Amino acid sequence: MVNGAALAASFYAAGAVAQTCSHVLVPANAQPVVANGWKAQLVAGGLTRPRSLQFDTTGALLVVESGKGISRHRFTDNGGTCLQSNHSHMLVDLTTLNHGLALSADGRTLYASSAEAVFSWPYDARGGAVTGSSRTLVTGMSNNDLVTRTLLLSQKSPGKLLVSRGSSEANRDRASLLSSGLSQIRVFDISNLTADDSPPYNFNTDGTVLGWGLRNSVGVAEHPVTGGIYAVENSVDGVTRNGKDIRENNPGEELNFLGFLNGTATENQGRNFGYPHCFAVWEPSEIPDHDGLVVGQQFAVQENNTLTDEVCGREYVPPRLTFPAHYAPIDLKFEPREGELGFVTFRGSFDRSSPVGYRIASISFDPASGEPKAEPDSHDSLTDIISNKDLSACPDKCFRPVGLAIDDKGRIWFSSDATGEIYVLQRTTSPGQFVAPESGAGGDKDSAAADIKAAMGWWTFAVVVAAFGFCAV
Image (cartoon, rainbow, N blue to C red; front, side, top):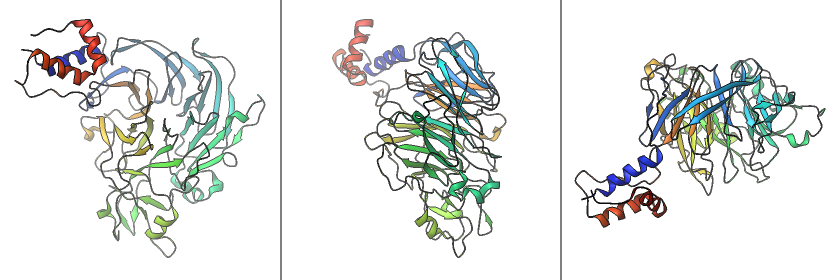
């Protein structure tokens, strides 16, 4: 008698993740812990602080190596997570590059950033080379700390380049002024830079302010259906409230909604999100004089005659979702077809007695509205995908995820800058996949076939039958 569920599971394993890798790299530290339904594999090592990732039109992986430049990597793909690097070379040697990376829709222009400026190069993906000199598109962004300048090229509004710029704690007073250009995300229409000698934009005076009061929004993404712009925010460290140290669990990190680039008006677009005056609550009970504050509401670090929790709630935009303090979100990417999931890298804490973060998690979104499914006061909007086995070993003996890229097979690639590694993640079960019944459950051949059809879908079932046949065991 055939066990339909077991047969379905074996067919899925054969078709989706079917091989044993002959060449497997060993991580620098302990093997990661991967959630049920996923598998992970280290596919590259020895890089110099790898940050943002981008696939070119040939499927090669481009990597910003902070303090070195942009490297290009090709892999022998044996399916699943069984990949082996077969060629790597430096594409751009420029030591000032540190994080930002983007590629035009036609794949012919490459963009990257330093702490001061955004650059572009003509790019030949098939030849694997830049084919001309660099051009400066945006300048005027230097500051002493928080030097990443994340880049996002809009797919919904061609020609629009988003640039995110943080600011250091020493610049908190300046960051409260819109004219400073600090702690802001601005949008630049690079289609207007038509002539080779067109002067670059100045970040402080040009472009459209999409949001400000954003301490360090490193991860920025566009929802693939609605075009809504979201950013993940690294909040402040070392916070006291009315004289009490609350740094362990407050303030929370944030997911902020910044509106649209197509002219659709939203009440939050261009507004201030709180920094340096107001921050998101994560653990209300640990905030002195919290007066009924809940997760996600804004609070003042020092209440006085002009700044109170009430003022924070009225004058500044609260996050759409809040995450645990010190998780340090770095990148955000949407599942590319319908945007049902957003994936976030959390590089991990440094200002906390017990390490937290050091993982990748997903957020569920409604593809029609482009909104997170969790409510703004949710305490559990994240679903872990991969994390470190022993957080007490962090940060020195951990992978620290940074950049994300999703390939045309739906696999998630991510960089770990601290260890110089690139990993690949892949689902081992499909959403809604048939779950095997308890041992001993079964049925006749017809009911087993029905189980398999329900699990795999008619088309996949037909392919499996054609390839393998179907017989009772």
